[in-house]
Image (cartoon, rainbow, N blue to C red; front, side, top):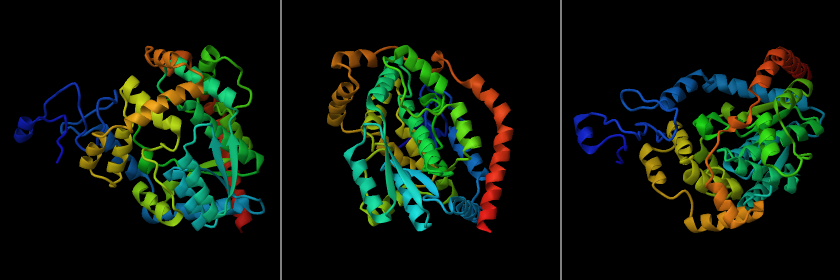
Length: 400
């Protein structure tokens, strides 16, 4: 059994905890690299307690099954007579691939959307191809305008902020809503889920939808105007919600979901191939999470991903600690990908090294949409609630 770095051998025998600057949760593998973590008298972190409190508020068993049944009936009813009754974004990773599998078992008619930002690993393309061949679903690829997207990514590097995935994540959801709108689709099925993604410190990421922050960073550090990217700020989100009536459903929260179970099913039924770490189906994400975050920000996202699996009873804490003892990725591949990423983004090796050694900055240093978001909620949330009830009633009428 691997002991926690929080506890010394002598202290363990005495049943005492030894205070130290570095502490790790006694139940998960979250530690003080999360600056907001707290511990109880037994060395158990807030993540453990908050997870179980949140899970107790969520639907389980028959109530969850009933909610899923109602949601599927709504999707089919609202989508009746249309070419597609929902949209599913697929990356080739476990979560989105499993959503495709579920859609097939539920006899849904999705339009499958793949977001191509220029960083796909070949294995991701392979997995998507295998799934589409067996499900028979129609694929649409949303290809980013590379010069603009590269300029935005370069700006984020120059800004020295932690969440270099904001450009991709922001545009993915923007693209999904845009394509849903173009095809008259009212339901987007997302792979985001409580079981595998709930643990994620706020200090390690930033809001994916803060268009004010994104625009400010690009205005300061970018070189070309952004005209073709599918932006999704506060007002765009409310437009798709209230005017278009487009719903995004975290469908994996309505089924018993285990990442390890899903992965094995995909392997057995589709010939899906594992790509390693979470979101490592993207070359950029693999390099960012495995190289930049640990070396520049002292953040190892595996701690959050593995803690989710511990809390979901998929692995033991000892297994998680053993995984953390391994490198984040193959070191040779990381050094190669460092050269590849720099070149693809248009940085010289020396310039890239200089950028990666700059003092880090907070996203908030460049401005946020907090005030606009508060105003929009006050103004538009009541309208959105009425609009959602109307959509549900229409679905019920169509079903009858």
